[in-house]
Image 1 (cartoon, one colour):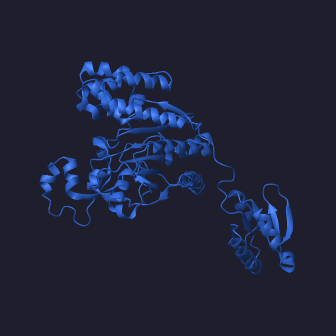
Image 2 (cartoon, helix red, strand yellow; image 1 turned 180 degrees about the vertical axis):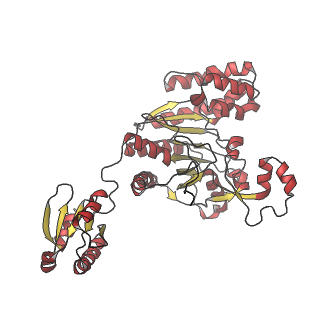
Image 3 (cartoon, helix red, strand yellow; image 1 turned 90 degrees about the vertical axis):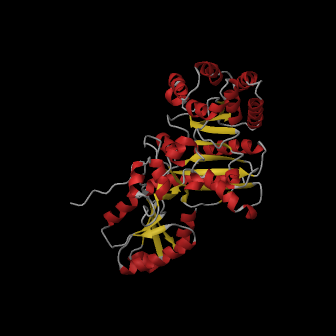
Length: 454
């Protein structure tokens, strides 16, 4: 008995109806990217592991999908020693490439390799799939699309303000109510300094980034397990728990970090971004979240995360500034800031809230009924004219019963059916049936084209 086919956990097939919905999301995001002056690029699905490793933190590196070397991947490797070794070291010996974890690190590599071809500041957008060896669960997949927009070659915080405005525009068009959360990596570095644990910045950010998922007590336990003293933790908790309006929180945060130069700089950057966005009259809720870290080591300034207000799901967009990312590829001193839309989670949000336009899945506008050889030949000529006029059309491939043919048009939500019988052949006309109203009318070919285009 043949084995039942399956797909890897954390991946999905998409039907034509689902693809129409996903393309609506991609097209909406792409149109706003273009509106804000971003240019498209693409990078390979796989990168060398030397490009990917060490850019996402310890936990991120564990989630990289590694690709076995071609041919005899054990060639030149002591197999017995390799099997006794730890998995990470074995992978390093038999894998040279990996599937990309995100689009930002490959973009940094792209900038370094193409630096002489790019006009700085360079604004790019990229819509491609990424892969993470994560545990699949609701809203979390192993293969998913990201839609990124980045600006490199500029230190100006106007870029952060523009990206927040871009986020606001995308979700306004998709009719999703969102909260845009802000923080700054310099603020987190200042907090680590103030509580006497500057060497524990990574441990602090990894732990507090889970605050909304595991709660304060669990974060406290994780911080203890990561080597922070009880005294440092007690100084940390009140800072990440600051409440009030965004202005009040900035004031209190500024006071808490006044003794830290880097922390004060982070607070001032947050103030500038908040002031700039508030003057734009955002439709989204703008919020300050001191616990927001996003768990990625390459952020150096502003951190952005977007949550849907009406659906319980993780982050649907995120990003931030990464001043030092290209430096690891031999191009120091190039600042960058970017955001990434999680298309698959946005898809789940729109499905939950049923926010798609009507007739989104109707790819064919008119279907021609097939009555036989002469009628289908005439239909093909008319369809050629219709397609030249930009009207999507098809013909039923066999001269089957009328009920069966009409059933196909109805099942596919095709709005019009075109009928060419003996009368229409003689008169050089076509009968158009409106599937929504059931009405039909006899029209000349130019009249039918004009009607369908309107």
